[in-house]
Amino acid sequence: MRVRRDLPDAVGNTPLIRLKQVSEETGCEILGKAEFMNPGQSVKDRAALFIIRDAIERGELRPGGAIVEGTAGNTGIGLALIGAAMGFRTVIVIPETQSQEKKDMLRIAGAELVEVPAVPYRNPNNYVRYSGRLAMALAKSDPRGAVWANQFDNVANRQAHVETTAPEIWDQTGGKVDGFICAVGSGGTLAGVAEGLRARKPDVKIGLADPDGAALYHHYAHGCLKAEGSSITEGIGQGRITANLAGLEVDMPYNIPDAEALKVLFALLENEGLSLGSSSGINVAGAVRMARDLGPGHTIVTVLCDYGTRYQSKLYNEEFLRSKGLPVPAFLERAAATLPDVMEG
Image (cartoon, rainbow, N blue to C red):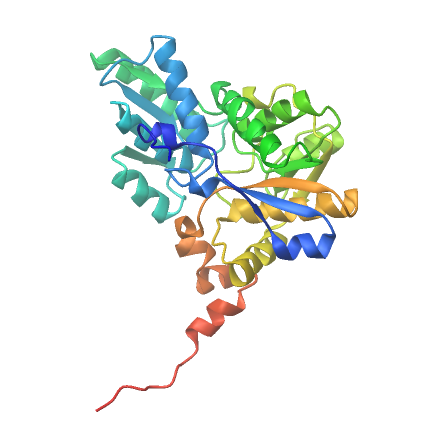
C-alpha cells in the first residue's frame, strides 16, 4: 500500500478508461485519461502543481505569499487547493460569465475571487491581463510577496504534461498509442503531451479539437488565426499562440460544434456513467473524428477533463440548452416527466 504524503503528491497517475460505445462504433480503442480523478477534480491540477514548484525553485514564491491567476476556473481551483497544502494564499481573477459552480468551488477552496467582465484578450481589462497587473501590485504592497501564475505563457504548465501525462499514457498503453487529441485552453496539455509522446514515438498523430468561436483550428488547418461562431464551453478555445503552444505541430485539426460534442457527452453519461464537462465532450468528439480518419485498429487517447457537476446550471439545464438551440438529452426530459404518486394515507 502506498500512502501519499500530502495532497500535491496525489496529483497525477490517473487511469485510462476505455470508452465503450465510441470504441465499438469506430473500431478503434478510444481511451479517456480520467483527469477528473485528480484531487482538485481536473486536468489543471498538474499545471498548478508545476507552476507553484517552479516559482518556489526560482525564489519568487515565499512562505505565506500569494499566487495570483486569471482563469476560467479549474486552474484556479488547483492553485487554491495545492497552494493551501503548501502554505500559500491564492487570488483568482475570473470572467463573470463562468459557471456559478466553479465560482462557488473557488471560494470553498479558500481563494479570494475577483470577478471581471468577459472581454477579449486585446482589452486591457481582460481577466488574464488584469490578473497580471494585480500580481504586480500585490508583490509591491504585501511583504509576503506575490507571483503571477500566468498559465497561458508559463511553460511550467507544458512541462507538467511532458514529465507526467505523456509518460503515464505511454506506460498505460504499453507504447501502443497511435494518436492523442484534445482541446486547447492555455495549450499546456496538448503541447506537453505531444512533446512527451513524440520523444518516444515520432510518428504518433497529434490532433486538435477546437470549439466554435476559437481560432486555432483555422491556424493549424489553413495557416491563419480566424474565429467563427460561439460555444457554451468554458476554459477552452484560444485566439492566439500562447508560449505553451510555441513550436507545436498538429497533424489532425478539427472544428467541433457544440451540438456534436453534446451528443457524445450525453451518451457517455447515459450509457457509461461518465458525468463530464463540456470540454470532455469536445475532446471525445475529436477522438471519434480522428478514429474515423485513421481507420479501425488504432489506439487513440484523449482527456476527460473534469466533472459535469461544475457546469450543472448550464450543461445539464434543459431551459439553458433550449435557449441556445442545443440538443436536450432524453434523461433530462424524463426527469421532468410526472411520476405516479405512491404516498400512503
